Length: 147
Image (cartoon, rainbow, N blue to C red; front, side, top):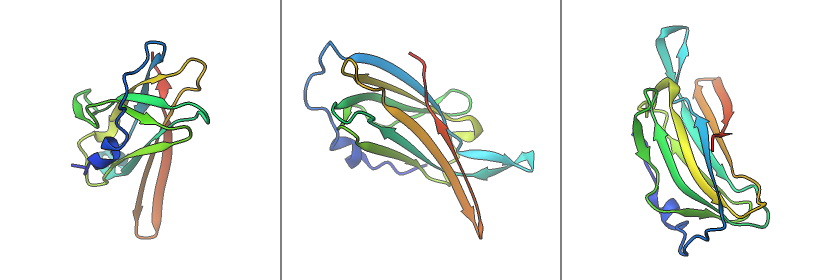
């Protein structure tokens, strides 16, 4: 299981009630805890860095949920139980350790968020990598808005 630094989320806890005028959104991000190597019977573990980015240079945005699901759609973990904020141009990160294979080959995240009107949408990205000896593997995914 990956370690979760709750201090990251505690210091970002939104301390005010959110305005009803904020716009709601939901995004889906594919993540790979492991990938197939050579055949469907052999897998290779990956470290995943999930990046939560506020793309606005003027507005604070809010992330309501960051839920991590496994290949079968089962909730693995929720990363915080309160609303967090990201200041203009701020980035927060979730790290899934290389040894943590609970997500499997088809793991994913659902993020729920709120932004002020006319504010750019947040950007959610996944960077997966692994280094063994002198060989390295790295690739990225980007979230898709689903609501």
